[in-house]
Image 1 (cartoon, rainbow, N blue to C red):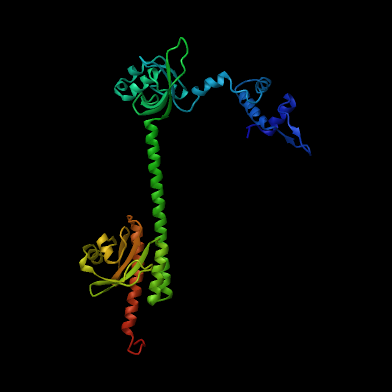
Image 2 (image 1 turned 120 degrees about the vertical axis):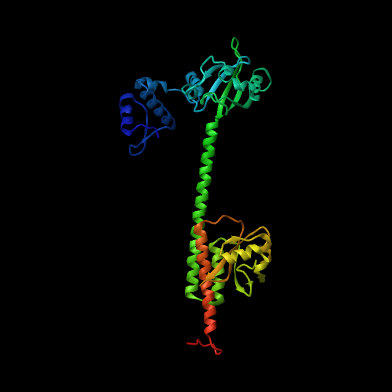
Length: 369
């Protein structure tokens, strides 16, 4: 807490009677809360070359004594932001720059005329804003001005306020830096990087959900079959894909035959494929596409939701489509498209198996071998 080791503290106690702990039961030392600040102050003073006795005496101040004149003077000098004081209104002359400004290349020096260092500023509205601080009723204002730390180029923002007038002194205005163009660009780059990171994380999470959905559907059709398996598969896809609804629409005589979807938003419908160019093209080419709103309405999709069609292909044959309803349409990654094709192919092969088994059954229900 104080940066002073226990051994060093014991040495100060023995040699300088500082600090003065109270002995608790069992001999443990107990220090006052104010001792923490005093120990830190002594350590810093000693590190700067002050003898220990003098450093200890200098900290023996009553609570609420305030800060020294030197500390008050240091407030602006050592502030981690740009602090500049101008006299004016004509000319606007630099009277003070703090350490954050002074050591930067091209920074203004004491006595510099602001408009001589940055002539372009004379044509800016904030030039008049600064001048009015000297002569008008406004005592504080935000303004844009030359960047003291970047060669007096434009783009720095400060809070400017009028200082109390002292007899025999020119009127003064202080400018406390808020940000610079470089800092704003840096923040923008950081914001962009954070958004990209979040987008990558979201894509990764979605890829994981799609992969889990494929594995779950494979397990369902490995262990069961028939309409019960199809119903279980659509329910699993709703959960795994965070979808609003999912449906399976087998092909029949040029149409997609849609029964009830997992959550009942879609169907029952029989949709003629050739009525809708986007649907016909997707099934013909085997592409995964977002359907137009008009096409979605034909399946019963509520307005404002996205409807994704995933063709179900097996053994070179189109057996229908997997329909996925979501809140918001998003661009699918290549990984997500591959996983969706895997899901639809698994369902397609299950449908094909059911059809083949049906074809092999004799009228009595036995498998013909």
